[in-house]
Length: 611
Image 1 (cartoon, rainbow, N blue to C red):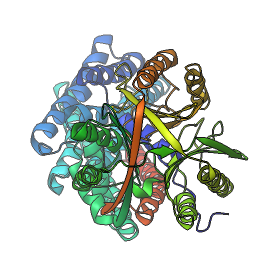
Image 2 (cartoon, rainbow, N blue to C red):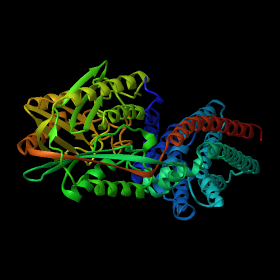
Image 3 (tube, rainbow, N blue to C red):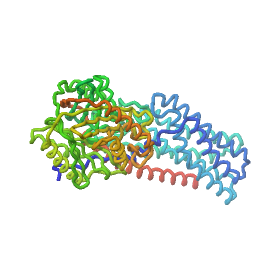
Image 4 (cartoon, helix red, strand yellow):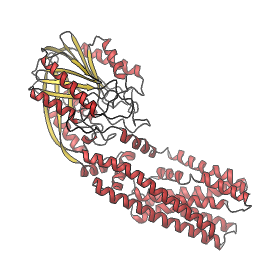
């Protein structure tokens, strides 16, 4: 058993959010307007002739009563009332219109059919008016939950298009001399009562969310959501990072550096293991830190860096860019200047149950990788590393314990039993490694940016890095790919390709970069390395890079250093509070909003039926 074990934060809780929020990325403006016109004209052309209207009239009515008011209204909203809003531009406002008028596809044909059945020439108008009515809660929820404009501007933006549609409707009736006082009063009462119900209902829902959320997560949920949308849609990270920094916590982030240097050409390679988590998503916070750290080290001293995934989870997301810059600078300053260890043990591998560990010692420093492959694995609990490190300290050694993060077939979490198995196999392998004799070694290192692959393929800008060590007659390879986990089975394919080059053992690791998350619709919210890519091309690049590393092998030495920085991280309580609150709040808003729509709909039916 792992003392103090808590299940690691896997990806299962965020996948639905990734896949849902991606829908906010609307098509182009032209595509949206085209879809909107089709959505309006189609039911009108099919349904209005049933009410005895000519086909030409069936196009004129929706054009003047729906399409023109919507285009003019949302243009005014974007340019006047929501001008300072970065999220709700004209394109996205037309996306809102597409949603608001969708019920027309059902209500207008139903009302037109009723017109034909009951021999009435005006029942089709009820379908139009009810569509306007039930769109109001959606409009108010959109305008009151997202924009930063003044309240009166939000109210105006929510009611402008429906009001223009009603006015156009009145004008059409008046133009044909069929506007009656009863129709005028009935429609006015319907519109004003729906506005009142929507205003009161939405404000009540949102105030309830803010009240409960502020207590649970330490910030106003709607403001946090707003900042999230600004980052997701506009790439503006500052507002969200500032808010997360206020509700996050301070923690020591430990970083270890194992630096290799060739004795002849002074070629450099290193393994940097820092206990941050590359999240929470995309480039927010430390989401893209592995590739940034690799690039910074290359710029600093020319070393090719491997930045594998440390044992950490979403609790350890660094929030602020200032702290990230501090960690990068700290890594440069702490880079080992004395690479005076000239001996190493062979790489040894142990297995316990589903757990595997590889270990290699350099003087009194042990490098350990952990994997559950071919079983699925996710973020390992911190207690695994802490237990192994404590054992090593008792033996007078230092350790770098790597979560290889290299096998995933679907959403998963590490169980307590798996954590215990990994702790056991790591401790066992550490003991074996430290008992082995050490001898001089050779080192070769090479890198490939893998520009043929994209973030959507699951490959980050850090590309591929390979460190190959020769101890005696054994060649061992450490491979790091800038990706978020690896398709189950692809690790073995990579290792087989390396064995064909004469490499005896090795491990394939990923950085867990979150630059690749939230870009594609998939069960995971991203593609692990190997899942959606040309595997043969990847293996070809891997083999070429490994050959370069082998060709550049030379006697080498190694140095170790470590440092710790007190940085702002998301923190366990904050992460758990936000994730649990989001799920509960979504359900709560959904239920409350459904009831609001039902009330508005029934009120509309009563007004149309009895006034």
